[in-house]
Image (cartoon, rainbow, N blue to C red; front, side):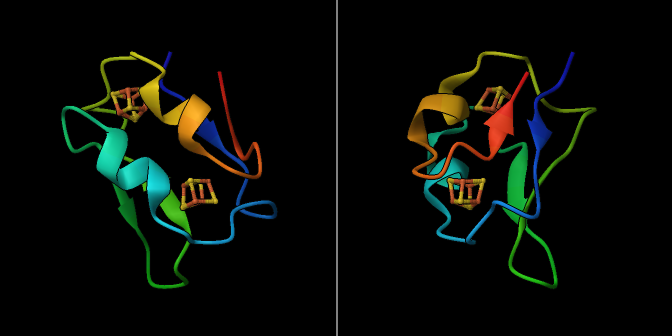
Length: 57
Ligand code: SF4
Ligand code: SF4
C-alpha cells in the first residue's frame, strides 16, 4: 500500500521528494507533499527522511 502523508504535519521541506527512487513524490499547490500512488513502489525510503513524521504506512 502506498504511503500516507499527513498534510497537517507536513511542513513542505521537500526532503522526501529527493529520497524517492521512482519520483512518486512532489509538492502540491499548497507546498505539501503528495504521493502518486500509481508510481510508488512502497520502498519506505521517504518515511525516514521526514523530519516531522508526516509519512506513514
Ligand atoms: S515509499 Fe518509496 S516509492 Fe513510495 S513515495 Fe516513498 S520513497 Fe517513493
Ligand atoms: S519530508 Fe515530511 S515535511 Fe518534508 S515535504 Fe516530505 S512529508 Fe512534508
